[in-house]
Length: 211
Image 1 (tube, rainbow, N blue to C red):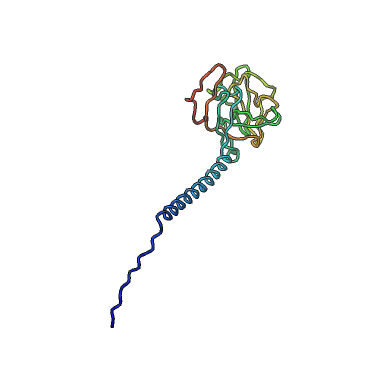
Image 2 (spheres, rainbow, N blue to C red):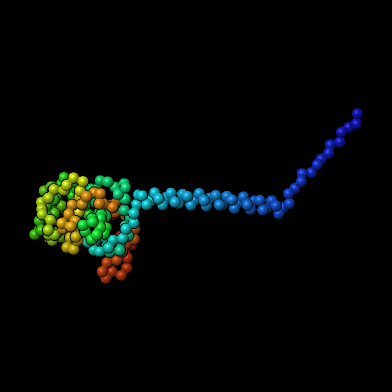
């Protein structure tokens, strides 16, 4: 019986140019998929940030010198901020005041608390106790027309600006007690400092959490 011959058939090699082209297409496809996923991820993050946080700009001096004109603030949105507490700095909108233009104030009292103000001494009382207010720039000696003492209604807050001499706040009937549904959010972070009056440079040392 004759011996079989082992025949070796060499594999047909693809041209080097075609291999390089396929590798290039694979790399481009991977990059396109990566960029596609990255865009979707960024869109999801942006939507989440818009739901949770807002950026607002302070206009005016009613919160001086805690906040100054031109400060950029990050707010915790009212989507997640439901229970304001005394001392919180909030942004709110009252249709009865300046056509609903957002304003920034400090929460002085919440529902059920009684507020009284001694305008001669410039002292604010909540539930009979005088508040210690190291944050105010000027004393509370301007009566805007609201009658005191008053008890904050259910679902409402009482607010004042830190610069009491110029602030329009709950002392004035056009603002009065603020319904919690009128709160846009709580100021939690000073992102970019503004300037005030003749101050020409920004004090970046003020950046950080707002207390």
